[in-house]
Amino acid sequence: MNRLKLSILFLLLSIGAIYCQTQNTLRYSINDSLAIEGNGIWIRSKPMTGKVVFKLNEGSTCRVLEKGNKQSIGTTTDYWYLISFENLKGWVFGSQTSMKQGETSPDFETYLRNFLDKHFFGVAFDYRVHNSQAKNLKHIDIGYFRLYNPGILCQLEPYKLSENYNKEQEPNMPEATYFENQMPKDGFCDKSKSPDGIYFKEVEKFPSYTIFSNEYENKAIELPLMYKRGKKMKVVVLHNSMIIKTLYFIAADNNWSLVIIDDCDCSS
Image (cartoon, rainbow, N blue to C red; front, side, top):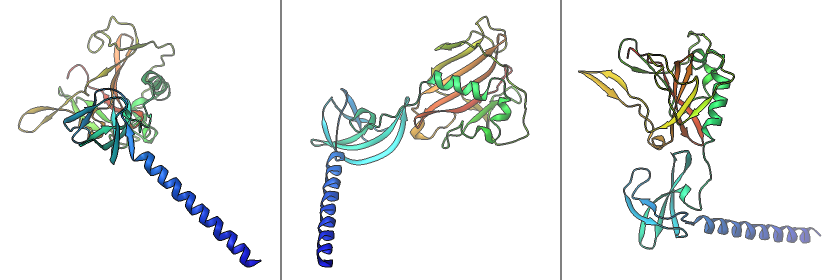
């Protein structure tokens, strides 16, 4: 009886091993190739910044040689893949292939409304972003910064966690209107004739700041390479015909993150 049980157990283990081996083989064979989705897809000599070495069209099947790092391009985050096609090799962004993860950042206006309702309207925003309540607002690899001008030059400082900061509350704007792809006219040093509300639009780059070494120099805010091509948004809050806050956000790793709080005034 014991021998029979042992024989049955051995048979079951053998079947299980064969099944697992078959599943692993199938998994490997599926992931060993990808299909191009779209026409004229650029294949680069290296991820992110490499020159375009050739192009592929819809349905081209390529062998996957290597999985690279993630990158955020626009509102999409995906991996780069080293592929071979016929006698050619190069890197393709995953979102343009059958390997795409389908991960994109949420709609910005929806995110912005939630952000302002929770962290800005009727609360001490500057105090909040200086203490631990704001740790989920920033991207761990990017951080967020403040532009300010103690004199006439707009300078940059990393935001630091601190309990000793201005606790003045921002105004409540329960019926705020959102103006997509627009900025108010004036409102920085002079009163604006644009209606009060929240203005937001995509920008190509973040604002620069000034440093002094041997002479004054404008510098750009440095982003990690994998996020430089992420979609960037500028937000202006106009209240009582004046701009009371300017914020900048970036799409990175399938979410939006606060990057810059621009507190420079019109003397800069």
